[in-house]
View 1 (cartoon, each protein chain N blue to C red):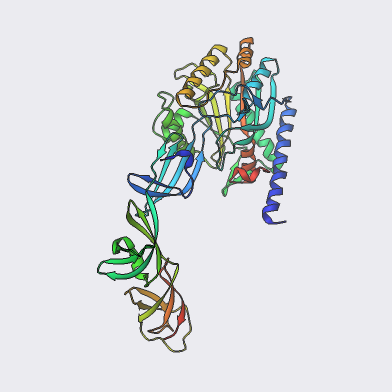
View 2 (tube, rainbow over the protein chains, first blue to last red; view 1 turned 120 degrees about the horizontal axis):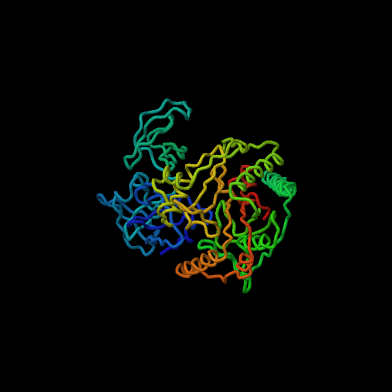
Length: 187
Length: 301
């Protein structure tokens, strides 16, 4: 349990069985009145936001959260198989991984956040390198970076790349936005 | 010097100007500046204000009780500027140590001290800024316009949908005050909430009803709570009863209980004329005049 005096930005608390991260915190104390702790928070599973006010005597539940480092091995149907530090295989469903499935690369280390032993969030390396498996041929010599065209990577995910990128090129992608960053190698 | 550093030296200059302007205002009005003890054997009893221990004694949470003893001794216009301490109060508007201005006037009621507070705020702003107008979060606030005064009953009925004066609910009062009423106060004019539920004013005189209310007002400028005033309770029997009730309430809330300030109660017994007093947060006044959002920005340390 947490007390009101523990509340601060970044603290994670549990409300109705859901984990919330406090994104904004203010302490107010109206003249002669009791302390009011106003917390804006974000549901760590579905991203919805909530504002709650607490008083000094209120108690907050502590969510059971665990961050685990895993290494990606392979896809097995709808499941993705990872290896933990003890070389044990751990299966995570595509539902829990969300958009992250588009950017998995073999042997990549990811951090998975578990809430009550259920995976709720995946943290990938910010940049990954992927091969372009299909894109329309670009105009040779066109080095403009502001003209974009669609291109597929090996997971089937489509990104927007500059016109000069060719099939077989290796590109760097920002996993937070799914945007092309730069070309790493040419085919 | 870095930009942050020069803003820092500007704020100390502003702060110094505010302190000088406060003093000149009261001296012109025939007040005397007094100094009362900071370390006390019996800090004022309030349910939600906790004193910082200092050895076997405590640091003052306000100079109120000693200033009233000076009123009982026959001084009728007094003010004090100095540090006060409140345990575990820390936020963008709170510091455990802060600077308080308190002044008391005999033969004045809480309407008189409200008018005087308006004069003070206009005087200080004019002295340090050259105009009685400030900028707060991009909005101009005209300090010399008519202040918006509403009763607590009206403000709560309009913005929170209930009247705490006719039926008081302590928990709901504080939550709705912070969550509904304060956010609805005007941001371009000073606003005053007046006539509190008797339960929400430990040291105020009650005006018999109906409805019975405590003679208390709170001043907000651009939504920032700046000053609190009472038509002071001077009845020693009633005061002892309220202190005793407050001690019981603190005990029930598992809070530290402070001894009763007997010399203060004796002073009331000797007779204090009707009077009104105001407590004003000096740090917050500097925040308003300099458009700072964090109290830490306006203190040297």
